[in-house]
Image 1 (cartoon, helix red, strand yellow):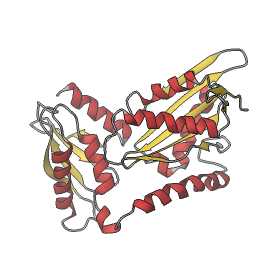
Image 2 (cartoon, rainbow, N blue to C red):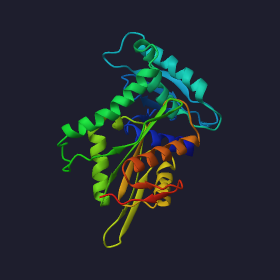
Image 3 (cartoon, rainbow, N blue to C red):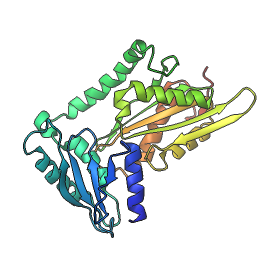
Image 4 (cartoon, rainbow, N blue to C red):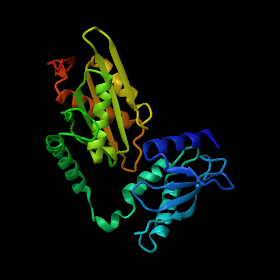
Length: 286
């Protein structure tokens, strides 16, 4: 098994469920079962020894759910084969793109005609709805904290990928971890996102400093956001940048968008003072 495939399996099982891509324990041993997120049908996939220099082989359906319509499994297999044919490139792993395209596209035609305006309205409603949900959410399971009062950035869409950032004052690494836990537990839309990139910087009254970040599968993104915070000299604040992947790769452009929405959240949250000469200065927020 190639290192690329090992890394891909690890990434997919960390982004989605830990059992999303598992070995079929068969001979040949490169056959895997892909349990597609939010779909009852699972697929059998063979990864040749030369993968990703050669494409994976979609062998067929492993199983389908009790409520699946007749022929759905076959349609899904054909749909995934078509995605592999379009997205695979020599030397590049492709299964993440396959999963995201299935999430975005399979069955969409039966439910939507256009959806372009509806998507924008959906995220506008989402931004408004978060404030309402915060008021309703006075407790959440075992997470014993007040509902965090996040400041949200504007929503940005690039090639069907949607980005939004939220920031909040934070005084300790433990509190930062609780805020993230609360966010994921209380917001289904955030929980189902492709990536939730986090970064925080904390300075105690005694001068002890903490800083950390998490890419959540978006390689190097957390470090870039943390570097942005360092350049802006921001302290006692954390940010979560959420991305819903839209099926088209952005390349390095995604890092610019991620940093842009993060900065927008910092400005909207009052952590940054805009100066007349266009430069920025830090602003403490309690």
